[in-house]
Amino acid sequence: MTTQIYVATSLYGTAVLAAALDAGRFPAAGRRVLLLCDTAAVPEAAPSVGALPGFEALRTRFDEVRSWNDTVSPHHPAAWTPRADDVPLWERHLRRAWHLGDDEVELVLPSPHTAPALTLAQILTGGPVTVYADGIDAYGPTGGRLPPLVGTRVRRLLLPDLVPGLRPLLLREFGVEPEPLPAEALRTVLGELADGSGPWALPSGPALLLGEGLSAAGLISPAEEEELHLRMVRETVALGHTRLLFLPPAQEPVPWSSALAAEAAGLGAELTVPDAGPSGGPALPEALYERIRPALVVGCSATALFTAATLYGLPVATSGTGMLLERLTPYENPARTAATIADALLPGLADPAAVAGRSTPTAADVSRALGGLLPAVGFAMQPRVLPGLRPAAESYLSEHLDARTWRYFKRRRLVSLALPGVVPHRLAFVRRSTTLRRLARRARAVARR
Image (tube, rainbow, N blue to C red; front, side):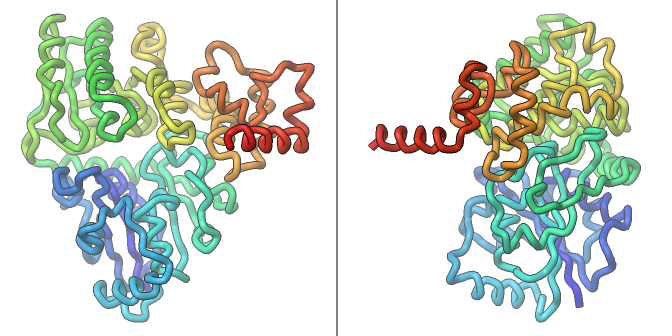
């Protein structure tokens, strides 16, 4: 018998899995197990994915639901991996605990280069692997060298087609072809989330401000995130919106909610923050799009921005992407992909003309904005994973590096990779010479010692 194990770390990821199942993208199996992994910094203090409003409407696609947190407790699921010598013991343990017996196990994983997905793939060996995208970060490169014994097992990459015409870099080093999910299937599932969120009452047609938990993820400081949201309120009201709705991430309370309400009131607008709980509002902003049809969706680099623009045709605007691009460290931080795409493709909230003249991004728009930029950024992020992108990166930087596009790169990064932009044209042969670059690396190593 074949057992399919679907790993989900978020409610949105669970919705993507449900949409893929509804669209018939997985073959029949003897048993389908949904394995929930709560990867918050302190999972005990954060709401579990299985407890979020709307989850019960999704779990019907699976035969049973299990918790990876409970399985590896007291270890943190996002940090723990077994020792190499213990892998056979863990496989026997999981097969016994989950009643797998001698079943063939097929894994469906997000972010295959990080725990817990990578951990599962290294423990349950031999079976095929399907990777699915649970965010815009999947358009970027694999976040490090994936072990060949895992990478060569990946058969497919399933992703919602939220950026039309853009080919993801994830798993390109293994020749994995992306497989877009039908938009209608995902919209249907997101509609179920709204129906399963309880009898909440929220204003219709407001400007929706997205809380993304950037400081909780360690991307910016709490003070910077508070100021970012205050600026969102000011600029949104300046566009003429007087009814605002702020949705915290996964309905987690944020300490500056009262400050946002006070800022809006001082500008003559009203800001609503849903109460945490089944009647306050849904856990995902996507569940709001059908029921209240926001007049504008504002965020930094959230996947929900692209869902609103592409699947629902709603007006969207970004705020704070420039600051986020500047703050992200190290350069290869996976969040850089979403910030780059949002900044290059979506209108900025501070530009009223761009917001007013917005339209749903088309494949032509995506090609103009990201056709050369994303491969260049992807190579700068992971040059060892995608060395074949060097010519594309050199071509883009030679022709398009200017005051606007410098925000997507770091001078020190370009220097370390010998890329155009920091080396005079007459010395271009230096960066093309592998011998000189090797000598320079040796010299730096000697200097450090």
